Length: 166
Image 1 (cartoon, rainbow, N blue to C red):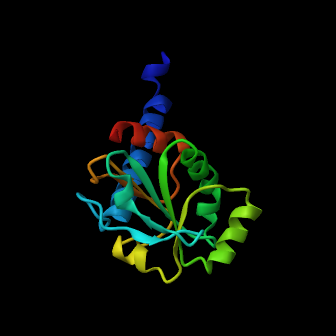
Image 2: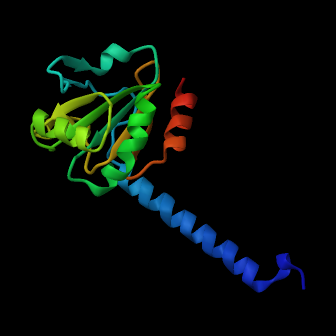
């Protein structure tokens, strides 16, 4: 009997399709209330005390990434976000992560270099309807949300989304 006709082969295909369907359903559920269309305003203060605004990036794709120092999934993903920030426009928003000094210490301790907008109270996250972190948005050059997700995202996946948004 060939591998393609094997009952085991078809069970694996069935199981893979079920897992894919469950994954897509969870992804849909997590992002159902996230903003669509034009990106909401995002204005705040960076770690250096200087004003930051999403509108300054109009004309090129930008990655907007909400995260927190206390979030274990964010810790796994922060290296990828910092790597992307080295060659793409990125605004990372440290939400409910303490003071600027505490966030600066976290970045230094983890050897991360990326632009960070402070969101001590979580108000920016609420304005963007972020229900959990990490939450990542790819904004296209026209200021429209091209992609939104909650949870871990791979660096290659985010880079691909940014390239497609260009």
